[in-house]
Image (cartoon, rainbow, N blue to C red):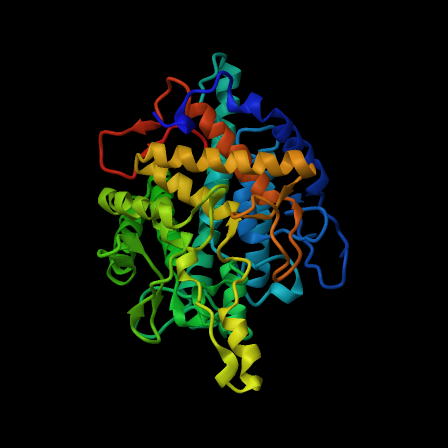
Length: 463
């Protein structure tokens, strides 16, 4: 048995208690109560409490950051704020017609990778108790509480459906997400709609993955997330007892899955890629976005096993780099090219912050959970152990976690689009969740609720 899979003498929670204590205390630093007045002239006021990614640079609630922050809140005394933050996103959509990148005027033209339905379900299942109460009065309170939360779930999912159709399906192409002759979506922007702003909306700001032409691609991660929306809508319809709605969303999700497989799965390499619709061909750029279909549950078991063999392309001593080194542009001899073109060429080919060798916790998390959902426990354990060890080393050296780290050095990265940030919301959330999952996997409890059917499997722990 590889050394990284050996049972520790104590739990991971005790091994990393100093890290977990910091994370617990840090939530106090970045938790904000609602305010009735604008803090800054460009801030959009939101009505409920929220958590920001860190205390230094980011004063706003961020869309996809929040999903990963939730990983550190589920199952804790702070789970209450998850519903507050979901309500904030619902407010932003109902007020402004979009869940923006963050709550500021400058971001109102674009969104971010959509995780709204999963955040709704995370908050719902954190608030609906599973245990039976013994006394009659507690049973009655339980029924009232369950009814109220079910009504909340129904309301939030109805808002998520509006976001899905208005923003992401975008038949009027108001947000530049629609591509003629294709049923899949792209990243875009209401006000500009070109490559730069589309890449901002992708959350990968910036990356060589899109060759500075983000709006020319149908991204595999975005469409996997929209597949997850459709599956979540079907699941909630079942909870609410609406069989017709469940059938509608099941059919719609199967259609999207078929199109993702047709355009984005490469059988030869055994991996998922973005699709470049402008040139009608699949990209060959290797990024961790190719594992998001596993997290979303749209891959087959065979596809997941093939994709797992690609992990070696991303492995560093400290975790998985966000993209593969081999996909980066090779050096170009600019001697024979006029100097006025050099800045534009360099802008395209130089490595960016969402490139090798940088490690980003969000995509490590999605990859690990995707592997777990397909029963690839050894690969997932290795990833989570390597990640927690690397992040703990950073914390113990600097007294804080970082937004991203360099996979070649295990240190913080250099400056790219902006200075590397301490704190840090999604790193903290993912670290916490990895530790709790590793604790579970090192017990006698089964990792799966039911492994008799086809993968993807339902995991038997919070994730």
